[in-house]
Image (cartoon, rainbow, N blue to C red):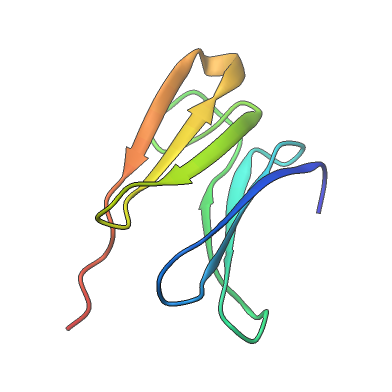
Length: 81
């Protein structure tokens, strides 16, 4: 990990880690296993340029402060089937 700046834990116990240095969000399960990587370097929708902070809204959606792209991005929670 490169400069983990922020972390949030959802109702299911998943850990969302805002990794500033690699411009991504890593998601870990309750057993600390990596289950998803969100983003990567860039300016396209879904990519980041040094994400600074994250939060989860009341619906479990991820909101990311994308610092050097000067924007906030929202990622909707995947529905469980």
